[in-house]
Structures are given as C-alpha cells and as structure tokens.
Length: 413
Ligand code: KIV
Ligand code: ZN
Image (cartoon, protein in one colour):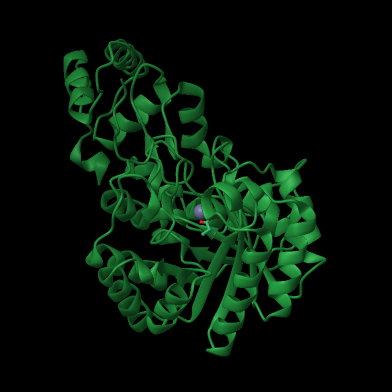
C-alpha cells in the first residue's frame, strides 16, 4: 500500500502556474472546435443517480459554485417533480447569473411548472425510439411528434428559451428522428439536444449523427451523452467536433446508471487539448468535485481523470524522478494540477525510487548521503511492499534509524 504525502515544497517552488505551450508531435492540431458551451446537469440528471438526492441547501451550494465558475447553463431540476424541487429551481433561477434551465416532459403541467419557476430555458423531451415509445411512453410516433411541437410552441410563446430533446435519439430510426427535428425546429426550438440516452454511441458514429442533424436544423445543437460503455466524454467532444455548440455534463460524471459525460473531463479536454477558451474558472474544478462527491454520496475513484486522488500522483521511480526534474515528462504538459486547483503528489511506496526519497528527505530538513538515500529507499520499498502506508513520519523514522543527519540551520537559511 502507498501513502499520500504532500507535494514537496522544493517541487512546488519549481512550478509556475502557466498556460502550457501546446505539445508538438503527432497530435499537435488544436483547431477542430471553435464554439463550446457547457450545460451542467448535475442537479437534474446527476441527481437521478441511484441513491442520490440533493436537498435544497445542496442544490443552492452546487449551483452557486457552478455559477461563479462561469458555467454557461445550469439545469437546476425538474420543477413539476415536487414543491421542494420547484422552490429550489425557482431560487436558483433568482439567485444566479447563469442561464438556468428546468426540465419538462411534453406535458402541459410540466411545462407550466417549468415556466412558473422562472428559469430562462425550458428543456422539453419525448422518447422517439420505437422501444421507448412502445414500452415506456405507450404512445405512437405521431402522438410524440404532435406533443413535441405543441410543447415547443408553448415554451417559445411564453418567451423562454426552448431546448427540445428527442430522447433515445441514438436508437431512433433516422427518418423519424429527422422528421421530429425538422418539426420542432420549425416550431421555434432554439436548441436541439441529441441524447445518447442509453450510452450506445461511439465517437465516430456520434460525429456522423451530429453532422446529419446539423443538416436538418437551424437551431443550435446540444449533445447529452451517457457513459454505459465509457464513451460519454469522448462522444461529447466528438459532438463538438461535428458542429454541436454545447454539451450536457455533470460533475464527476454522475447521473443515470453509469452516469453522464463528466464536467471536468469535457471542460479540460476543451481547454487543454483543443485550446478552446470556455471562460470557465478551471482552478475550482477540484473544489467543485469534492463538494459534489460529498453531497451526492458517490465516491470519486482514485484513478478518475482530472479529479481522482491519483490524477496527479506519482510513485514509480522513473516517473517520479522525471516529474521532479520536469513535470511535463510524465504528465500531459497541457494540463497541470494548478489548472484544476489540485496538487501534485509524490507518493512513497513499493515502487518508489531514490530520487523521490532524496527529495522528500531534503524537504524534511535532512542532508542524506547517497548511501543513506539508498538504505532509506530500500526500507521504504520493503515497507510499501507489505501494503503499509509510508507516511512522512515513517520516512523520518527510517531516516533516524539509518542515522541521516539533519541539515544545519545555516545551510537551511
Ligand atoms: O438521457 C436522456 O435522454 C435524458 C433526457 C431527459 C435528455 O436525460
Ligand atoms: Zn440523461
């Protein structure tokens, strides 16, 4: 077992918070995406995660930070769901600067509740795949189409921004999908959202689908991707590459089943890999993730991109030694921990090399000889191999056992 120890001050001093120059090499193109907005659905689809529920204060707190960070749209909830949900959505709409959105089925009472809640945008949806029409909605294609058009007309007449989603778009027959998109666009939808409701899309197929959709609407395109096969964020980015203007994401990727495209992954891919200035304050991503982790009760895996505890941690000898010299060696280079408000960690354990041990000992005020570093490293590896945590006090114990001298005060000054 390894230990999580803080980044050494000497390493910290060497870093500077900068926008890293784009990497050269086989993948150095950055110009595929020009327009990219982030629609956060943590408080709606995210809350639909099994066993997750946000109370009023949770919702307000999460919405406030998303707003402060510069997220473009917050889907605050499903106003018709309950009085408490309605109040939370209403108060978020009142208290934030961001565009707020409320979800509504293509049902009058849902749409009126969303409009009454004071949101700027109403997101209305209906199933369009045959499987959902038959065995979930119990409606015909024509009924779905008519209700969709009526709902879009009502929302636009009321003066709200309108987003329409043909739910399960990726399992809908292409002809019917196009018919629904054309009809709702003609009815005035500002946004057509393409949901990959059951997460069956792959990046290339999703790209092709968004190009087809784009050819049949003047509305702006938004994408909503689920992670059943682990492609949610990749599909979201693929949607942008194909011409979508906005992607629906949730913090830590929480949401129905395996969840949604992750806010942190999509935002950082846009910023760091595509050189898109989203306008979002990425330095608060780690803070946001920790808050959502706590409130949603869904632990973030250690190896989760961007926000996992291991995302900027290094233990193995070659990697840690490289990172001590230049963090670009074994990190993306275009994304640093500072950019997301995280800290780099050099973890001591079974795979640790002498460079890390020397760095940590020097940071702790020791002046080890090469032989002493080797001996302390041997003890660290042995201890780590027994699945023991090599904490800083453990390291100091080894140093003392080996007889490493502390640096004199004059040297330190
Ligand atoms: O996954 C989905 O299709 C949804 C819709 C409400 C857009 O969440
Ligand atoms: Zn969804």
